[in-house]
Image (tube, rainbow, N blue to C red; front, side, top):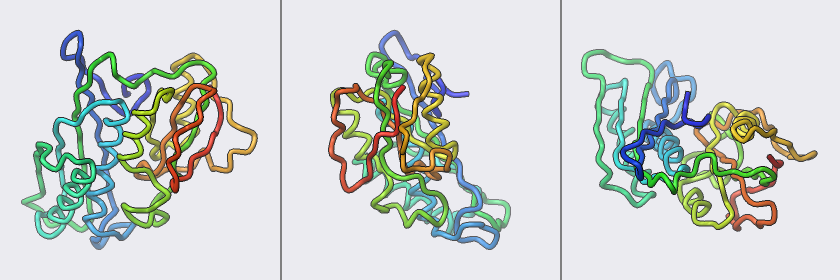
Length: 243
């Protein structure tokens, strides 16, 4: 599933424009009795919205709308989730993005569940999927983290929307792929496969390429071999191989 191996779907509107859709779900993470990882609903909202937004932004699409489907009561869980979603949108400078919301109104719940979808629009000529070229360098920005390893939405070692926008504006950068539960290696292999190439890792990457990156705490990007990647410090950025 997914367009060219990515965690998005692309639908043509006409010969020039397309819609890009992404979604993310989160379960058993929150402040309820049976949640496996204890965090505030606000944090659940921030990260779940961030994942879906990053997937859409990484294709060069502009978000048009967001949906929030909460499997919990409106107060206090969904209210906290929505505050997190709205703060994530403010950070992206789109606080007024149209939003539709659903919450559980019939049953008492003992575990947190959330699904968020984002739909964006993009000029087909600008769509940043399948833009990599044979011989491109492959870099990882941020660190793969999951669960309690993530200190919060402002963790200085994880990616945020601003980093994706910087990469999109950088000449010589081709594909940008947020990394989630599949890990860096799986995303790199998928990216290379759609070029009918193989991912060739560096001899000493210094990262666990198979580890889950949880709520998209890192991303990979390709660029022309001679390019020096933009300085995105203090976020860790390292070359992990070529395709």
